Length: 152
Image (cartoon, rainbow, N blue to C red):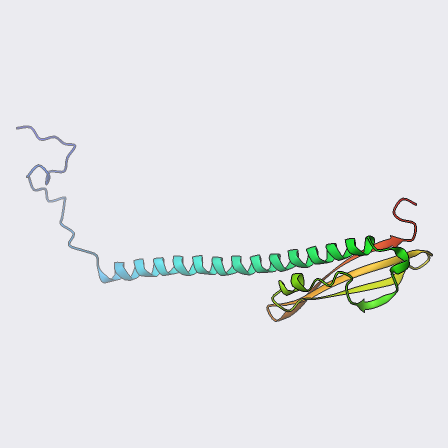
């Protein structure tokens, strides 16, 4: 009878000393595999925590930009004669619900001043502030508003 060399000899019923029976891993192998899996799990967890932190920061900044942009548009839609100078005054639109999205710590102010060296031009600055990771954050958007509009 001719043996097929493609199969290990133990399958064909002939014992070969090259193929030893492995009855299990050692304790060292087990500890190494547990350590490798633990490192992988901790790395994945750290990446998820970092990703969530970045997501929260980006979300807060996007909300603040949206609030400030809407307020700038509200000021542009207000008659020039109604714009009185104020420093850190209340916003025209009073965006309480939008500011509440900034983890209940958001606030907004509106500053309107006469633009230096030009008559009939005002500088408008909207500031949105919030607390993030126990740090004060803020962003500003400024624009100029003319008595005669954009193309006058």
